[in-house]
View 1 (tube, rainbow over the protein chains, first blue to last red):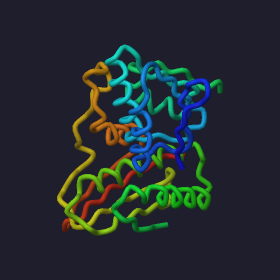
View 2: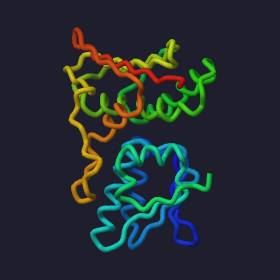
View 3: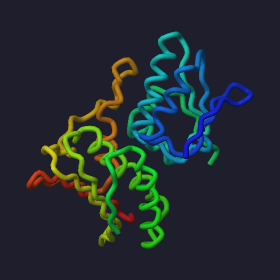
Length: 98
Length: 133
């Protein structure tokens, strides 16, 4: 189960498991995002390298036009994956409160 | 517990269901789920993506180990590909030099406690162990 929606405040909200089976759904949605993108990961339970690839591709596209992705409410275990991947050096990341 | 899965990403949800059952049965720490889920997915996806000459299902076994959980993925009728010798990834590279390629296997090597590859009679078997810690 994976969901990705645009909230009323313009934040992109993801929920569930972003795995290889759901990467196309995420990429299709994010391909239509323009300008600075704030991605709320509070309800994201899991991400694999397929999901990281989606984030990387979108971030590179947006950075190319002077914006990018900001990741907010990132859980501890997903932050670990970002850290192992070196994504903590190329994304602005705001950890979850606890 | 063991189960065979078709060579399709849509099987990932069924692999997660199997892992959940194993964790419940063994009383494994829920905190280890993400490591097991990630390593199993990355290795399964790698087999599905690159061992395209085979139509055989992929066998996944999850068994108790003295240190925690042992997971084995077996792929049949395939060429040799040792994921433990895959090219490393420069995780310190700047954004414009980063590509997603190879990141999955890199994460597996980084996160599991041990991993072993064997190839015999066109059968590829990867075994990894996740410690209880």
